[in-house]
Length: 570
Image 1: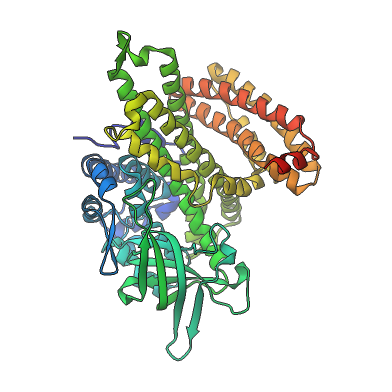
Image 2 (image 1 turned 30 degrees about the vertical axis):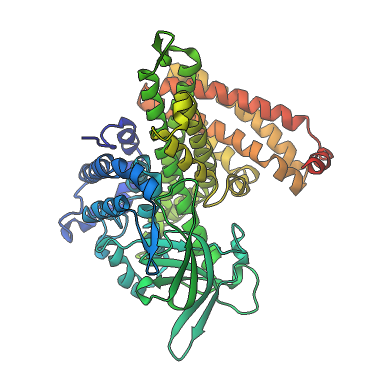
């Protein structure tokens, strides 16, 4: 019996991070709900025990139901029957198992039937499910929509929709993109019209590339203000599919994640309810929803990378050439070593980001019940700033590394990896989307560059730098300090040019340089708690230093006039 939680000790390692004490205390309001709900934890140890028990259930379902179904789901895929999406048989079985286990609405408050889990175990569950089947993780992971309703919806909206997730296992969807507005969401023209006589909003228009588009409950971005063309005219709405006012025009035939239905939808006078305030749909609510989705793609990327690495390692042990297993050849074991190191570092970045999100989001919920103390408000703002700059960095790096690990996993399999006889072929196809949807890697750089220009990355690097490290780790810290000085010099040079196009041209290099330093510190922080991470830290920092030097020299040797040459060649 496979269990994708218990067979991966690194998950429990991140679940036992010292910051979990603070996170759980905040989330559980100092354990004040223990007298109201018999399943609420009585203390920190009880809470962690609850997290582990639930994650074991997720691991069991993922290892013994979702993963064995993945190949059949990939072949069968969903279809449209009588204007409804019908999942593949395996997908239906997967979702039913997780629903019966009460694993929809994990993070929702107990008063709505949820488990009141913090972000960390929810993200960890997403990683586990993604390792089993990345396409199915999209369907299960869209319970993020419930958290958006919980964060921004009225009391009436919460009472109507949140129990549907937590108690009935409702599916969710984010209906954002449309044919003429892809990543540029402020150009959305999909209409929302208010009927004062019926006291109801009605939605009209077309949405495209909608993951799980025939969901029970959908969050829909629509233009509610006439004669507007920008983000200030957009609002967010909840649509309930029981109204049957949407036509599923088509299902996309995709390269990967084929079990996850991607729909084109036509809304015709579809009744809907407003989330929060008018005009705040994109500016506030969808940005929050997208950040949660990007954290989810980070978890998905780590899960896919875990699956790819395991397949490659297993094959390298079993496959013999020239009289010995191929894992004994330097060309192969170096690839595996690089893949393992990348996997370690994106997982560390995933859970560091999730901890930042956990703390600031929990303070946000506390604010709805009482005023924050000045120190609490200051702390909330600090972690929100960190979450805002770490989330796009996570999405960028984890998705790119996920693709690299899947690519190398195919290479280690050789010609057989190109065939459909091994799971790695599906894993490779599933990996490709991670650097595209929920904002391409290029768009993540646009968001992450704020961490460079505002000094946000350097400030956090300084905080890592001030920590005490074991003597045997000091040599790596010194390398990171040197890398930081190099990064600061080139970043200052580019910023001082005060040329937006020139900054944009070098943005990815600057973000990746900062990211390499941050991830180096995360690995030596891990090595402080477990010596197993020391080798990964040493390997990563050496390669990161070489990568940063290459970027630094390229930046030093380019001038603004070079943009014209490069642009003309493009």
